[in-house]
Length: 293
Image (cartoon, rainbow, N blue to C red; front, top):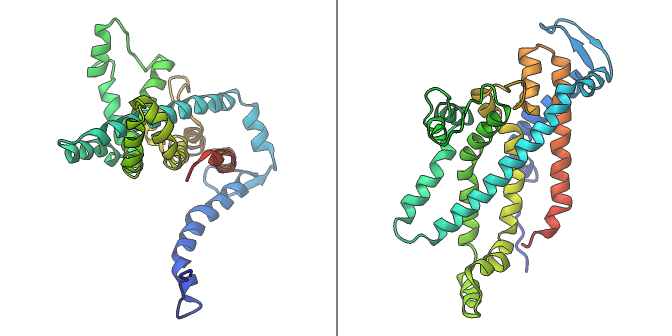
């Protein structure tokens, strides 16, 4: 027998979801429509007049070598952030799940970096890796590594990747730890009795049972790397040197707020939104088939 929720008033369910619908419309649907409309126009810096140009903004974007380069930069940056965030977060979660003494203090300490805003995380690592006063840069100099992310694009990419990973590890760690604690201990103990080693138990039992959590974190970390890392990049490298760390979301800001080219900025935001929607669709359409619920 199925329990079915009933409401005394037929309009009450719609009233309950109305706030969420309004928030979605005001903060997502309406701005998305405005960006799509604006991408077909050229506007002056003050927004007093505009000219319809149809697809010219998009054609100019793909003719721009620096914009095409930002796709590669975004791909490298997002791949590194997502992979290492999930790998390190899983490693820490497995270690925390085995800790018995002082477990609460250990887990609480691991969660603390998530309370730090992305811009603040960027400032923190900016000072740690500053070529003049940074302690990390000093340690690297002891190994004859000349660290200067102001002029070295590869080092600048390492800086923003490390700062972004550090800030997001706590979020990933928390969900992986919750997933590990939901796995029945009897399964692990039965495999141990059968003679399976720790490594084999993890890859044949633990990790497959973590697939729902892994899939969720893959989607969330991809969204984080694509959008929420703007504050990290803006506070550390400002897209430099020579736009080596200028990912797509930073390119939108730089073109619209700095360059005052609202039509091109809107076109870039539409392209970025389309890419994220397609990636999310691909994840749910194909990758979710491998998830074991």
